[in-house]
Amino acid sequence: MAKKEENKKKKVKEEVKSNKKNNIKKEEIKKESKKRDDKIMKFIEFIDKYRLAIYGIIGGILATLLVVILIWPDRIATLKDGTQPVAEIDGLVVTADDLYEDMKQIYSISSLLDKLDNSILLEKYEETDEMNDEVQDQATNYYNMYKAYYGIEKEEFLTRNGFGSEKAFLEYLKLQYRRNKYTEDYIKKDISDSEIKDYYDDKVYGDINTKHILVKVDSSASDEEKKEAEDKAKEIISKLNDGKTFDEVREEYKDDITYEELGYKSYNANLESAYLEEMQKLEDNSYSKTPVKTSYGYHIVYRIDQKEKPSLEDVKEEIISTLVDEKKSKDENIQYKALDNMRKEANLKLSEIEYTNNNGIIEIKSEDIITQIGWTKREEYKYNYLLGIFEGANDQSFSDAVPIAMIREQGGLNEVNYIDVNIPSSYKYIRYIPPNKNNTDISPIKIYGQLPSELNLNEKKDFQVTNLPLVSIHTENSVFPTQKDQEIN
Image 1 (tube, one colour):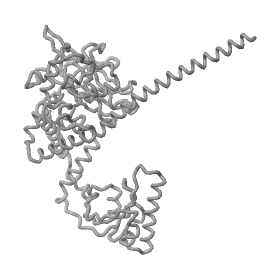
Image 2 (tube, rainbow, N blue to C red):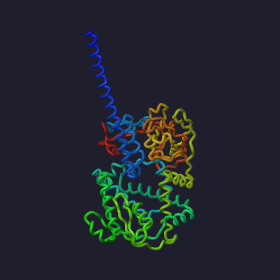
Image 3 (cartoon, rainbow, N blue to C red):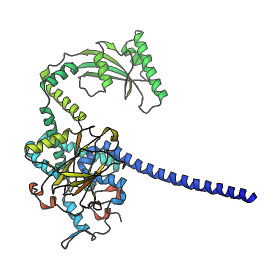
Image 4 (cartoon, rainbow, N blue to C red):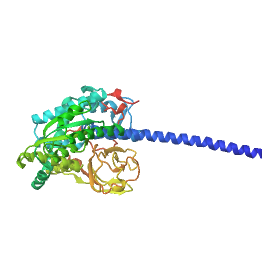
């Protein structure tokens, strides 16, 4: 009996010990998973904050590689020695040194479409002082941003992002400027006179002259602090209701409020919508009867007077610009559609490539250079797309897989969304890997490209059809690899 009891205790101890081990293991897995998710979320936040800096400057390939580094670090090739062979074909050995030298000469990892678009757009939009001023301002903003956040000076910024000179960087920004310009002109063609008239009738009004009292409260303040600020604003309104003038309450509460005379503001003024709506709703010589909440706190708005509504002719260009911005925000694919239209107008034919789909492995039925992929977003899988990766390979096992494109926008539901292929080449197989690695339906898929003979590229080094895998380089802190001392050993 005693022995049985002893065995029972021993068994309980072993179970407790085993449970502890399992709990520790689960905790470790949980920590690793959280660590990975945190890295991805930080990356997403970084992309959202500096979208153009990432996609416009360092290019889509490096952004794709960053995600691959975060999610699949074991897939990234590393270079250990400058003389280490990277590729060998017919007795010709390409070393890391050779690769670095070529990369120094090319200011950015550009996609094929960058080169083609630039040749088309240069003829459409000549260089102007306005373009140069705006591009220079953008460049200065990038320099200042990187210095403020990372302590990086201009020269280091250019080197890290793969630009051989400031001139090369400015030329890339000019390409983006011209693309945006074409997109706006493309949208404008579809804006009808009736749309403009409807907007004029519904949204445009004469400039309104206001002043206001603001009880400041930070958006991160506690509920108690926010209520205190709102109650203070209500208290001020009650004093106005009792007959005190705006100037009198302003003087009485001068230590608790901010006072400002905004002057005349138009229908499209750069003010928060709550303030704009309030100043339009009020009559002349009247004030807010309830506090107006904005991100700054609680306002009491006083409307002084209003000018006559401007004529349609006077504000027509402003209305068109506003409608362009609205259409851009409604359709995330509008620039793809615009640039696709531009390429067709220039007789650049991106033909749809035939393929077969076998359990998610897409087999290409031609030797076309893949330049664009269309994918469809489904409601039931709507969280399985952002930061998903398309891989290209020439071996069905995907042992030579290369990340060729990344989904960077949420995309429209139940419609084909387009992304450019960042490493244009001939691939026999393509597959999609969602960010959470769950099954995802992206069909119907459309794949576009051109035959190598149709590409008409200026320099042979810009593009080469090959059955060899392309090299992905993992550098310390994801720095653009232009120097050998940036390698990971």
